[in-house]
Image 1 (spheres, rainbow, N blue to C red):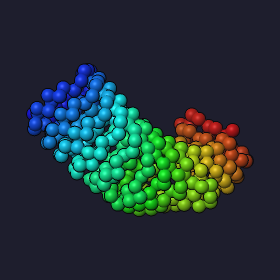
Image 2 (cartoon, rainbow, N blue to C red):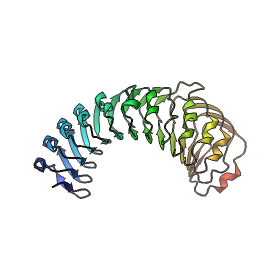
Image 3 (tube, rainbow, N blue to C red):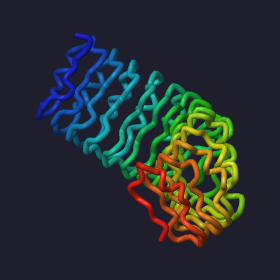
Image 4 (tube, helix red, strand yellow):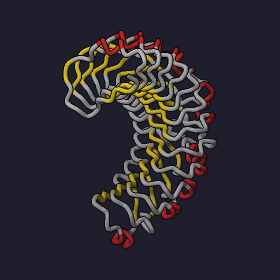
Length: 324
């Protein structure tokens, strides 16, 4: 038996430890079931296993340290369970690992620094846990193949490493709802970026150069989402925002300390659907021209003046407009 595919059923009970007798097993799919209890440590003996998918169950206990013996493992997907404890440091022995997906559990402690040295990793997705600690300063060098870094809704602190700009394959940087602080580094080399989600941290220092990194995003021709709200960013919104990718659909800048006019170049972002600039100190007139695909527009709690642009009447998809 090389492939055991049991996804999307209503299987309950515990994972039987005699699966470990299937010594030639390469793929084990147990996702989207109702499995409970601890994962048998004996599964760590499956040296040929390449894919272990057990997300969306009710599994509990700790992730077995014996998983460090799964020398062929390329993907570990254990999201949306009830796992507790720390991420085993033994996982750093998995030199072929591409996907580490452990989100929406109750994991705590720090990610072992040795895991950041797994140069093969493409995805690190551990959102919605209770993880803490800081990111290593050489992150962008030790993870050159990183495509997705999703740490949102944890308790990480410290700066975003400047070396992140060396992870040239990065497509999604999602670290919202943590305690990251300091200046956001240049992202100039990250041409493949699609999502930048850094809202609800302590980033920025209330200074005029806080948003310099936005200028570095003009080369990200695939950018669809930029969320930087609820931080300490000061200064003006750079004119370069109008030169961001025309693929941009979501621009969330609210609840910072930004001032000055809203850049007229926003009209170039013709595919914008969600625009939130509320909770700042913007002055001048409300832009609206060309933004006909808007679904949500929020300019609340600013110091804008003038009339509401008639061009907003062309936004046939608009369901939320807040100018209070």
